[in-house]
Amino acid sequence: MIKELTIENPSTIINEIKQSFAAPDLDCVFWCVPKNDQAGLSFYEENGFHKVVDIPEGILKDHEKTGDLVWFASLRGDQLNIPESVAGCKVVRLQTIATMDSGELSFFEENSDIPFDIKRIYYISKVPEGKKRGFHAHKDLKQLLFCPYGRILLTLENESGREEIELSDPSVGVIIEKPTWREMTWLQKDSVLCVAASEFYNTDDYIRDYDEFKAYLK
Image (cartoon, rainbow, N blue to C red; front, side, top):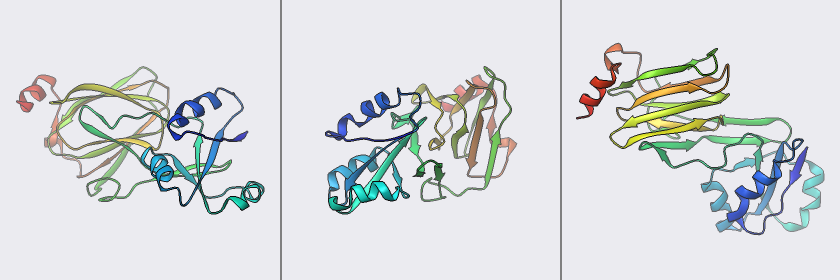
């Protein structure tokens, strides 16, 4: 089921979408903004809402007298509230294109969407629910961590403190650019953690002892 949402006040969009998804058979909420409404467009773009490129002809026909429109959508499972950072590490919403009845396509590019060259990509899968991994930090390696499937609790600690964030939206990731202790808890069986790294594997870059990490920060 797809629902078109009429929004009087953009600042209420998150609550309105959450209320809409209370319906178990609703998969997508979408809305449109006039191209000349720069304030509205900036609001939705800055808050990471996904643009839609394949609006059904019937819907376009109903709005043809409105003028040039930009369409946005939110699909069930999208994380609507994301912090700017976690333990001082930037939280990013990857570029995403939503398609009606066909899901979303998310992507990122080196030195554009993420601030480093990509030398290696790896992923962790087939992990039992409740299992923890990680328990290490890196001295120089930069990484983007995201969860393309499932739910993973990411706990990060560095000189900014210790904080956690749940990764459950494939379009949301965390960029780590400084020595940061990380622990990952699998909240859902078979969740997948994917990592884009700035360097090739180097065992000397790892800090695997927590006390050694705390000393390294000092």
